[in-house]
Length: 300
Image (cartoon, rainbow, N blue to C red; front, side, top):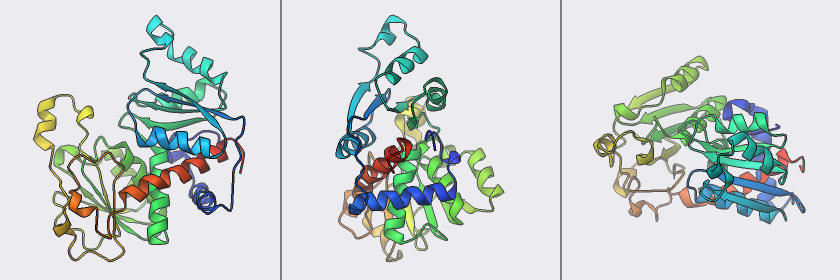
């Protein structure tokens, strides 16, 4: 693994190896030392958990970071090309971790620079490091990634987290339920990919009454920033709100996950139930991203 751009680039064995390393880092069986290593965090789109968890991951391994948030105070304002910006930053850093609103930006970066590139989200396309921390969260709560039934709810059209997760879990013989308004259904290319791999899925409009057989319910927000017009967003916002009463009768092992930030799609009365896992899920991002960085820099 030279870069991490898409979940399509990872084999099942590579994913399981990364899960194993993340677990050993969490338990202290592996303690990577990245002293004198520097990660460039290039975030051209807002982020809280992803940026801070990468920053935390690097510093917990004795490494350091430089951070670019947007392009307001950079030479891009003077007309410098994206390629020149990337090649310059690559001279200062050992690894580039990048988020962009432009689909394909991370792959382009990996073709321009000679240091490893990690895709921290590119538009509505992919978010592979989120998918990997999601897989780590699933394996911690379920004991396996195999033969699970997983529900994905909310904005499945623009939600890059669910795109990456669906592609990753397709390697593990799972079944899916997709909950979304018709306007926000899972993209056809992902459904075609699942069908090619003989992964069963069904598309439903209502969460209530349809989650009793799930092992994981993965909820996403309706992403206002991805809509072309405010009117389109207003039509579907608040389409799905999971509350505590809707969890009556679910499996005892079932966990509710969310990539965060949460708006109103999970009511706060769910937070104190044994099913809520979205905040521990965020913590798992540090261990997973420590593993990703360590593998790409050849430290494990």
